[in-house]
Length: 251
Ligand code: NDP
Ligand code: 8X3
Image (cartoon, rainbow, N blue to C red; front, side):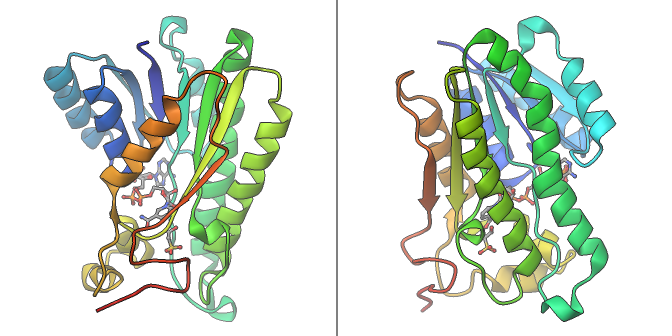
């Protein structure tokens, strides 16, 4: 069955790959993010390559009025069957006593409050339809904490808690809740974490093969296409070179 998928943060990395994967399988999309030009380019490409309908909805997930207005502007015939809460970031990597308060605000506002604002706006329609699927992108950082990861890890532990809570609160509504918790994957993530320092970002993946954005898209697509009575609650995924947040086998 053709579905409509709303993906937050579809301008890069996982979100863009998820958009490509669902479009290639003939599903319609609502793509969101702050970089409008990238969204427009992606819309044109996916519509012309796959003949699907792609609705562009730019907003900053941290701005609750923007989020609510954007979601409320979705025409009823385009309301999403699947929400992928993917927009997120790490900003900085330092001991807590040296942390930058702006970095902290960015991570908490985006990864926690943004996910909540979008979910709060989308869920009532899914519930009224008696079906839907929320897929939250957590992290291995939401399972264990690591040195210097403090606030990023806290924000992803919050995603873990929110995912579990959502599943309880939505019992009986027909809405599924899945969390996907990836380890290291090569996207713009590290470049954002290191405030644009490309060399430092590249060094994160020295000596091992991380996952790709396409790997996460594959898993998201799998989780979204199970029979109606089945729900993957949580999927912790790493490349073969990584065991958890601490252990990575480098050459
Ligand atoms: P990228 O930096 O490649 O992509 C992040 C996406 O999030 C972009 O599309 C960006 O869009 C969007 N975004 C960031 N801030 C906002 C905002 N305020 N409002 C709207 N959109 C926003 O990173 P990834 O693809 O790697 O990250 C996606 C998710 O996966 C994040 O939640 C991240 O924490 C998580 N993750 C990443 C891992 C990795 O190793 N890469 C591992 C585990 C989890 P724009 O800037 O255009 O707004
Ligand atoms: C991103 C993976 O290891 O940087 O969530 O926390 S890690």
